[in-house]
Length: 127
Image (cartoon, rainbow, N blue to C red):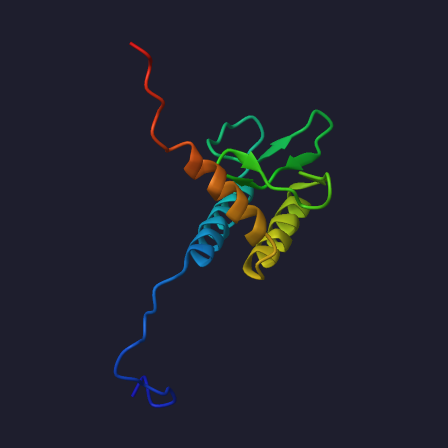
């Protein structure tokens, strides 16, 4: 039997995610996408939606984004510098760990509120 060493249950309890968990999960998935893009990186090839870029000296710059805004990684610091693509992947993995631990939750909440404000009713033009 394939399942003889596993504890089987009738069904899984799927509780709905709260808004904070949804935002964290969305950012986590985007970080995974960036790790995949970094693994497939080829100089001179354009990739849409990339958070990193290669500088003229061959080093890389990375900004973690939510919506169209850069997240603050430390006080006044919005980017990560890496000497190689391997260091870039390591930086993304470190950011992914911080994301899973809820480091970005306050920033994500603030940015989500700002984004939601943009969807409010538009002011009426005077006639």
